[in-house]
Length: 284
Image 1 (spheres, helix red, strand yellow):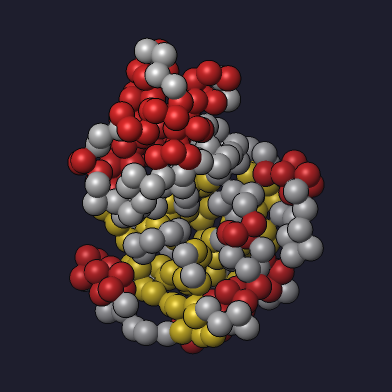
Image 2: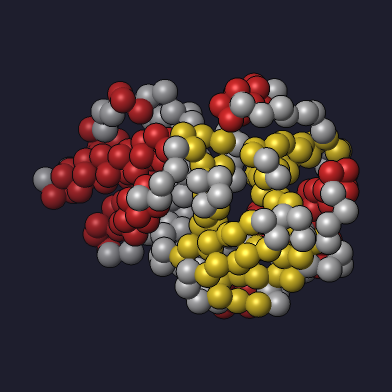
């Protein structure tokens, strides 16, 4: 798999193939991202697993099948107890496997703003957090210090960015998908707050970050590229709306060849224009 080869070359670590097959036929793979930091990938999503010497931290358990495979993989490298599950945010594609890990002894943590979403958008596999946090919070376990950074509204209003100063890498969920232009309709994103958040995350002292989608490890340049693209397309849409250009003609005005290497370039523009029209015309 190409992304595994690139990841290994980038961080100069040995990766090994490890996979389990879930009942839906989608393989779950196990990747070493940094010493004691592992990715559990199923389909387009990735969990982050950290062994600390005193217990395991599991961020975003995806779904029951992926979490069960992740637990099996963990037991191949450590007998440490499963101490914490962290929900990065409220979306089901990242969090529905928590019961598997709670049954193994984990305490589940989310931002407090996620709780209202859990009640208003319930799911039979959704496990409510045991603890919530209200802002930036440090969690120290064994040899690992994890800073859960909260940047306010961006992709929803309860997203956390786990930052690991000992390896100088954050784990970034959904704010950036390396190699892709982004979801067309920007669902659940506030475009302006998204740009602000990316600028603030850029201030962290890292060269590479771990990603919940696409490449397991990507350079900071991928985050900067996402922020610059958003700024550029927002500026074009705003300019055309101010000039009175009909919405259905704005896509033809978008010419951003510096981003043409990104998957979804062009095809995502109609949805983005529709979303940005709401942002600039309706205020949401």
